Image 1: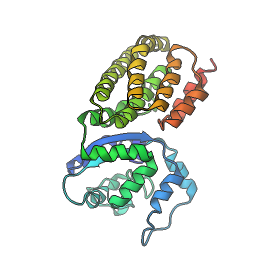
Image 2: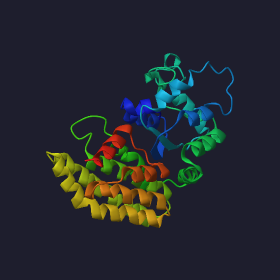
Image 3: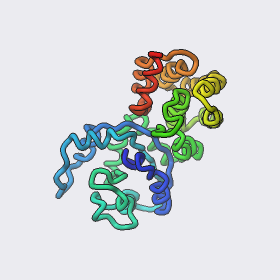
Image 4: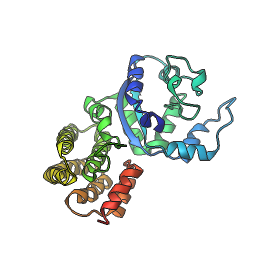
Length: 296
């Protein structure tokens, strides 16, 4: 799902459309995609009769709108790629069938979704987007889907999305809460074969939800920090324990750096480096708020 799908709050509708066509969401991951990666995907293999492409700058702007969401789908009937191409619809929304997803798109760029043309392309694109390790994990998940991974990475997506507006959109503790949930989602994909890791992550997810609800009831920023400090130790311990267990030291380091923003002044440069190394999505607004907090 391309950034315009998230900006326009189209995720729920797209999920419903996919499910109605017998596709089952298995796992997903928020990510920042760059135009260079996507253009390499669009050009492999070269497509016949490919229409004239907008300039590179248009792709830079498009993928700078916000996160994309890689969604892994299971389809128990033959020829999944052909079936998904039909559900997706034509590149140009004006030419798409009325029951397709892209019919609701804005134009030939902002057309909500991308999917591979065939199985070989699917494997190649997944690796380019997520790296070899996570791509392999996701491919294995299709063979043996996990309801808990689906719960952690698909069913809890709304809470993991960056908040774009509202009274708490610039709250440091709530931003940390959302980023921790994104880290938990990465850990769920890495630890999909470990029952104990998934159990701990489900516990962490419930704790993050309770923390989020309590912070939402706090009238002022100081109250949200009080809530965050009360939850910080147990939450950090749960997530860091899973990071060690599933062999994700980079995500463990990101958790350590992130925790400082609710208990003391954080080091944004070090935190940003750790989050980037772990491929954890952070929006421009979230980045700005966390960095600002280190100067106050």
